[in-house]
Length: 298
Image (cartoon, rainbow, N blue to C red; front, side, top):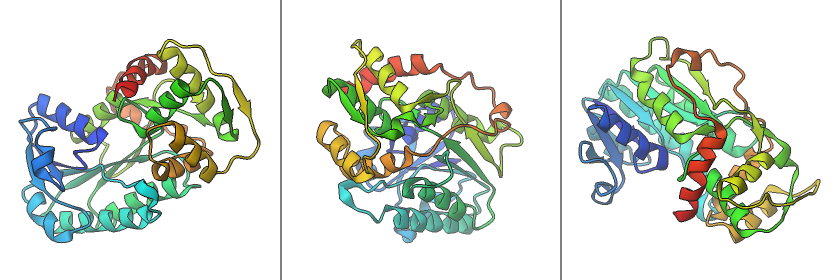
């Protein structure tokens, strides 16, 4: 039995579909199971559980061999306490897993060395999950290219709504995006890949680019011309996030931690973990061509 915490999120939902289609016995944990059942595969059992309510976790984890942790909060509505909530939720979950005899944890976090609160939070979540000694497979990825990715939606709507852009220095930051389907493939394969337990695994697509080039690829994917960009040396994360909140559907409270992380290069530096997996990675241009139109329809 596998459990997915965060099954109602974008990657969690894709993973539930992947496991169900492969005939895996998957249990999806949600704070509101009655609403979640309509969005998750019929083959998946849906149970109530909230990582911030420890009393709800033991029953959800009973009989589980491997648990996926895909829970994170991002300051929606301007709430700045997301990092503390993430630490507390991960700690509660790890302790419940220990009580219930869960044998392995799998977590998806971020690349980069934690210069922003967003990236630090991802690392601290991994540390809390590993705190009880249960072997943790810690996948680390840069921007995920998929229709439900907040970062990708931000890029797509900036290109759609602005004829030209004033862009800060972070648009020159290098990154190694990965298609959402590829992330899902790595997560789904983890239980069966020898040597993947108890280690960090950096994952990325085959192409290294910059955030500015991603804006150009987004324009190409929607069939429009590339947007002129006027670079400015200083544009704070706060101003950038409010600007993004005005012109895209992404909540400004979510945009701020995302923008803060954009100043950090997110490149795979150790590909030995990826080499364990038989995943055919999607070219960036192909991933963008699929994701951008779908993001703009959502």
